[in-house]
Image 1 (cartoon, rainbow, N blue to C red):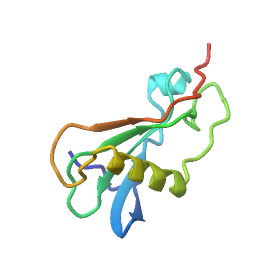
Image 2: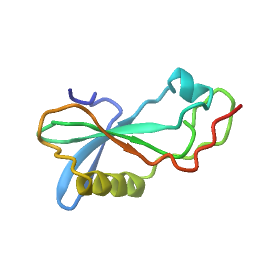
Image 3: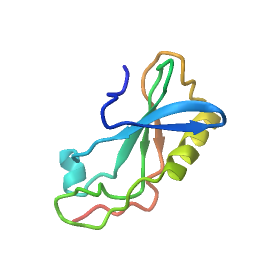
Image 4: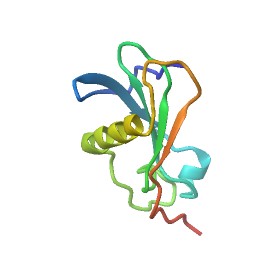
Length: 109
C-alpha cells in the first residue's frame, strides 16, 4: 500500500529518496494524548513495505492543547536509518514494519 502523495515530503537518506507523511489530524487516541504521534515512510520510486514510526511526543494538533513538537527531517532520517538497520526492506512488499520510539511518552490522564 502506498502513501498518499498529497501532504507528503521527500527526504534523501544515504543517496536514496524516500517519501514520508504524518496525519494532519490526530487519531482519536492521539487527540486525547493517549497515544503518541506516528508517521510513515516509503521508498519514493518503488514503494514496498511501509514502516510506521511511533515517536515519543504528542500529536501537535491534540485536543487537550498539550505542547507537541514538530517532526524534523533529521528525526525522520535517523528513523529511516534505524529501520534499515533493523531489517526494513523498502522495496519489498509485505506488512507494515513498526518502529517504536515512544520511550518517555507520557499519556494524559
